[in-house]
Length: 409
Image (tube, rainbow, N blue to C red; front, top):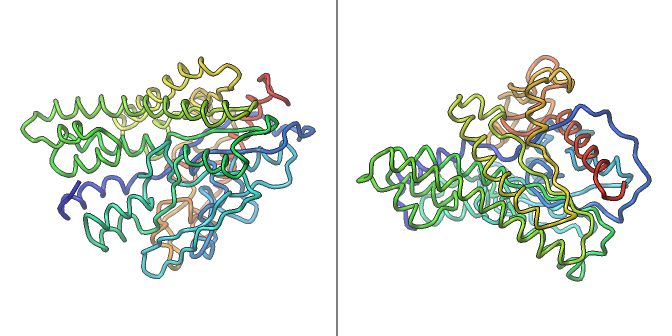
């Protein structure tokens, strides 16, 4: 797809406002660490579970590195779970920012950490490499637009290894299989939703911006042409886009399950938990987008979750963690969960030196950027990522699922 520069800017601009990741929690007290029943804890996922993939270069220098309010003690939920289960450490399987093109911003070469089994990476999707600010998106812009546009819309070039490839990486590191004693967790889908919810409203205007966003969303070439066709009515283009978005989310869930079976179950894993999406419509960024945006995000969430639930009936023994319902319980009664704010974000607009390219993302958020006042029990660090307290709630919820399942406790 060859794009003119003006069209590219218009299309990518809509993508740049969406952050990556999503989370939820529980009101359960932290469980005592049980005697370890698993040989290791393996996680495939996105920024919600990222344990420090991009904690390099300038990101590390400004005190960032995880998608939360960063501090020396801040942990994402899967790290808290690792503590609960008695493991000595949880660490990122790969680190680096190999293609930073932002002036004054330093990245780092990709480095594999063979002893680490948290494969989650910020901006990751199920199988598409086109996450927000991803290396694939950066390359696409450089091929079709200008360096200035790439610097503005994809300056960091996050690796964003799709989850299906993360699964493959683990198999390559482990002789192509599992022992059967590992606990394997899969959590992904929000970034697929974000690229789709970006594309849908652009169909109203049509033209090249709609086509580009449809391309990033993962829609077929036919749909890309249809949503850009200004000879069609606005209502028809919107109808096509809505259908494509919901179909894509269901297809992404089904593709995820195909790979859970082929790359995890069929390779010998016995203890597997798949997380569905929490209600993305209840995240700070979606609520601030208005009732229509929030409702659309919830609808796309359900498209993914419904397909996931239906498909998991064909995978007996694989546990589904219903974070969707848990997030809705939080919204209904935040006080019960110890939450003081479930709509506003803890990370402010302060920009440390060389941190402009991290603005509005919790990846660069630390004590230097948190707003005034007590935000310790806020749910959201940025528009979609939890605070450390929110991550702890999610870890507690996960443990409640694990402890009521048939898996080893």
